[in-house]
Length: 152
Ligand code: DQA
Image (cartoon, rainbow, N blue to C red; front, side):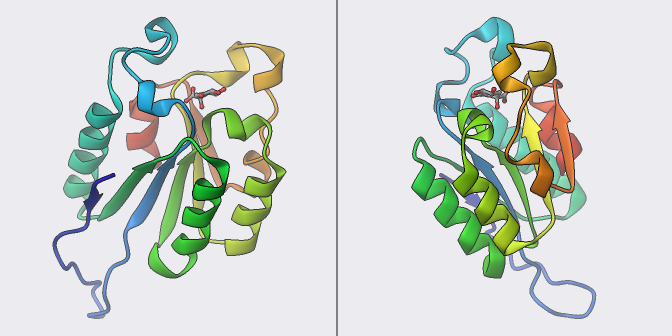
């Protein structure tokens, strides 16, 4: 998906500023159509635009991506180690199943915030366990698209 890193920002020491990777897992491409009572009317493009606007206001670059495959998500986490200053991740269903995603985040060890649109703790018990939380610096859930803004 779009990478909002077209301008060449630099840090105060003149070094190139790295973007925050905002990584989205399976079925989030269906936002807007998918269970709107839980996930709202916002599409993934709306969410991307919301993140881009917030990042701009913070002077921060982002790379925003979505995938339906676990291996691709893990590849992006690996890529983030050298290319990003932090990760915001909505692992979607893989949050609750993926030891491999847990291991990848642990391996790269860069600041990571786990986000969810819905309050997973107010939902089915199988959503109460996250493989991401133990390797994240923080978790934000239940605020819809605002969860992402808070994470930024
Ligand atoms: C979700 C919550 C997950 O339990 C679910 O599998 C998703 C979306 C959220 O953003 O609320 O796909 O991560």
